[in-house]
Image (tube, rainbow, N blue to C red):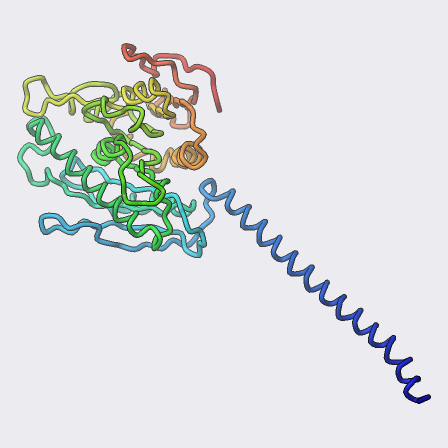
Length: 365
């Protein structure tokens, strides 16, 4: 009994000591786990805040898919996606190349560089092929091409972009796409295509979230034949690049290719200046980006020279939905850095204000 009492007197304090050690170790372990979770959360939050504003992905995956087959021709798209990306719903940009609806490809080096660079900012980017309905056709897409054929060319290209959009939405989980954040972008003929596609009312893709409208459009030297298609339900935030001396696609309202009245290809088109006035009247955010004296080179130069402004538009006008009525004017065509950005003038339907001759109003940056 005496031995047992001695043992108990020794064991009880020892058991308390062991219990204390175990509790202490468990608390240290839990603190470390909590610290790790908070660290991971802060990194994730910081990354989410930087997404779409800085180039955060070095590795880009490129895959090719056939989104439709028409008249025996496979229409493909190249999809660029940031690798090692855990996001489940990512903003997407669909790019449509130029070429006068006769030539051009989705995978020339300049387009690949543009798409890879955008994907580095966290976007899913799709560069698509579409039907070149004027390929090898007499008159090309100029003044000898009948106006009705020009309109049918627009309609065919629009249909192809819509089919590509449907394909991406159908595979939204595979590509981790947010159907409500799809931006269209295009150059020249591609710009005409995306403008005619974007300014349409929301389309029902059978999603639980409801009908889908494009979240924004980026036009590089584009135009549309009819501005009545732009109204409250169809208008979307727009970034409109254009040169005032473009002789192919008018900056304001003029004949396509400046064809003479009475020629087969005489077709009035409404360019960036006219479109911006219509959007302004509807109180829809737009950014008119004018280069004074520039020609049709504004169909491709923004992809490199004004890339940062494209990123700014996508983030501010689409992701944050905080766009304004912005106007950038480059008055010296030889100095691309000498530009002024201001709130756009209050255009009326009758006014024909040329921002290259008008002084910009209140600067917003």
